[in-house]
Length: 270
Image 1: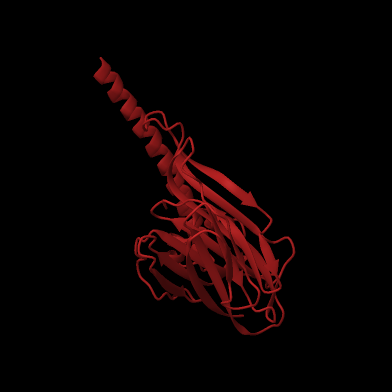
Image 2: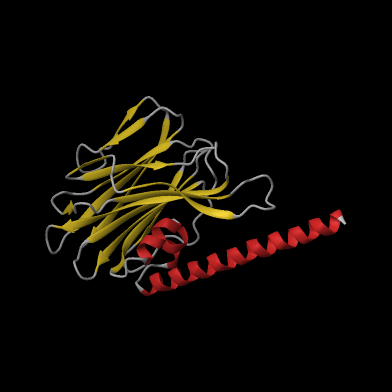
């Protein structure tokens, strides 16, 4: 009798998880289809975090204008970059399954002409060190200015709740942190924190991801410029901060923690 009950519970759990997975896959397919029609290439959609994808989906006026994908291996510290031009042509095929994927893209609003900068991260293999990772993006203040109150960031994770074995657990997407405020900003850059969910939680964590986004207003009608991004992965719990004193690659990291850092850039013609 115990074996029969266990078998019934297993089938019920499998059915529930399969139904939830099917619904999630259907919703993801609908978002992909809508974004593909607006010019977002599949390789970009495959690597952008789900939070960033949902945000783009809810901005029907935004169309694809370029992207950069950076894959990072936490153990070796190596990173690999892949560019995607505004016409969707990519320098890469399948992105290697590294520990961390950083995907930042540019979208142009068809009505206002403003540029939406989206910088997303997703840990494909969960990091051992889960603290607050500083992130920054720098732009040429002769080309752009950030629009007031346009900044937003969110950090999410998926996990099984009430974990004590998967029976009776459900896979949930949880907002760990979100804010409309940044850590610091200047006329040529903005920084914020990716707040990675820690190990002390009631959830069995499966994935960790999030993104930051903001609007840039162009100062002229035609130009080519480069934007720089920087991600700092903290390896201890001591605090770190990221500053952008000038436009370009001059990011300044301060604090007592040891860290790894990744830098990337994207050239954009407006």
